Amino acid sequence: ELRASVGLPIALKLSPFFSSLPHFVRQAEAAGAAGVSLFNRFFQPDIDLNTLSVIDRAQLSTSADGLLAMRWIAILRGQTTLTLAASGGVHSADDVLKMLLAGADVTHVASAILLNGPDHIARMLEALQTWLAEREYASIEQLKGSMSQRNHPDPAAYARSAYLNAIDSFTPPAGVRY
Image 1 (cartoon, one colour):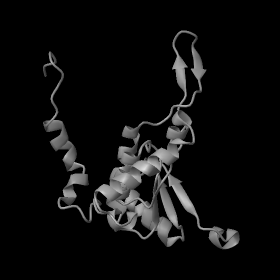
Image 2: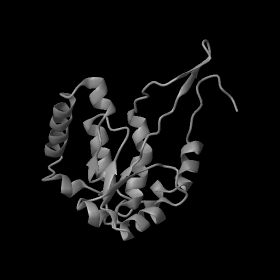
Image 3: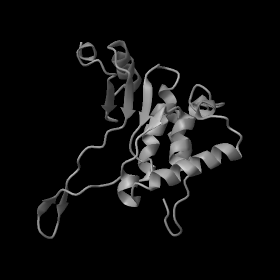
Image 4: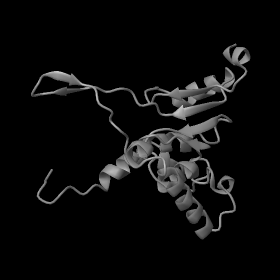
């Protein structure tokens, strides 16, 4: 109904707090959405312990913040025809490439521009083009989704069970014993 009244494609910017993200994405697709953006960052105030006041400052993302979106994009690619956008944690050409390999159609870049200025986009694009040329990719379409869960040789790599493997392989800092 909304799509018919505005005449524009509608994309939903989702939070990571869904109990069944694939199910919700399928519902959004059935309702006529054109895409989803993973994931929205919520305002998170802090408390200053010296002044006992609430601090409302911008907390910019880091590249590590993009890993959750990358995982879910990799899982969703092949399960939906919606446009998949990666939001949060995209700071470099490497971050863009990881999102594209996972299956993103587009990435959002905000924190990196705030930190590095608008010229950072040109540097990211140049690094992206260099990476593609060095590996003889003819286009972004050729690599998009090639590391998604559906196309990965070990689809379980994106499953929660992989968490146990990561914990088993963790080496604590020197002097820390469990």
